[in-house]
Structure formats: C-alpha cells, structure tokens
Amino acid sequence: MLYTIVFESRATRALSAADAKTARQALALAEALRLSGEIKYIKTLQEGEFGVEMLRLLAKEECEELPIAPG
Image (tube, rainbow, N blue to C red; front, side, top):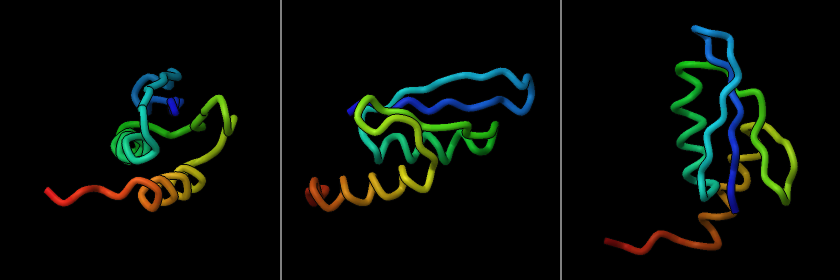
C-alpha cells in the first residue's frame, strides 16, 4: 500500500508530500519529517486521510502480519 505524508515546512510554510511503500517506512519518514515541519495528514487510497497515531497502529499491525526475518 502506498502512504502519502503531507507536511508543512517550518521554514517556508509550504505544503509538501512524501511517499512510502509500507506503514513502517511511512512511520520512520513521519518521525524524520517532524523535525523539519508539521505533519498535516497521511493518506492512502484504502484508508483515506488520517494522523500519525493511526499510522502507528497500521505499522504495528503490519509488523504482526509480516515479521522481520532474523538476519
């Protein structure tokens, strides 16, 4: 599933977007983006628009469904 994170830059106040392929990647990206801007919303075709807390829940569910193999 593709996740689009829409955020506002603190420096320019402009809206930008970044994409991630998994909820875990989107959560990591959202955490990084919080340092430089404000997350406005996260969007998927299936779930619509939602916030970071919902993304955390989706990432947790994703981890339970697709555990990381030991390396």
